[in-house]
Length: 303
Image (cartoon, rainbow, N blue to C red; front, side, top):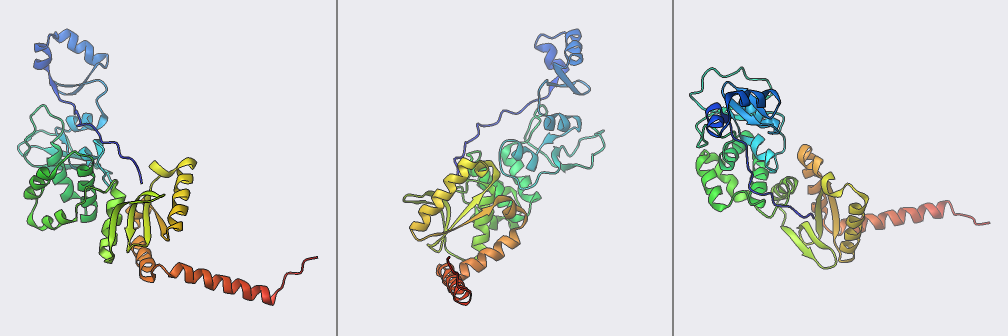
């Protein structure tokens, strides 16, 4: 369980042309001085950015494109499982553009963004990010944007209408209640297993838990962001104890395992769920019997 802070609608940088700066009252001498002193960043001939502009936009501008796809949605706080490359949108008729670095992915397509904008729209970026990721990761990204309030159902309709028909099956998998990308991935794993899953369940004396499976198993998805300090871990243990008093078993999954070792997580959860709520008690009884037999064979003599 965590508290999610909804980000404000992002304000993204724009290119400043020499003419626009002169029209705003700058002389060419002052413009040159501002660039030399670092108050303006010259990215191309006749194009500038204000000092302090995030490097991702500076790179995109120098490459003649706009920040797009996974790079843009990650920048504004949306979950993306993996972002090793800079994704930029390029106008199809762009010419005399710089060579593409190895860590850059270019998407050659039209956009509604103006020539001064250094990012596509959130909706355009999500369309491209859905195509650039494998299905589960794409669902997690869309869930995240929806949960954060960056898109609504109308935007989702636009997104899926812009995607090839084969992607429309993903729409029914979305759930804005998922509070993190790993939670979405766990929900999809549980769906694949075929068990009954309740999401974001409020339990008396416990609080809200990520999942309750088949009415007996609590699954929590933990990440370093929310569970790394000792105070958070103490709260988790007290919640687990309160849940056990209500008859629940709790499994805490690591977000990194969910993201990068999903097959192993799915296999483990399938076994746990298949054994049912009595499996843990039966294991305890077997252990108790084994300990009792050992003590009978090797009695402890107190002196």
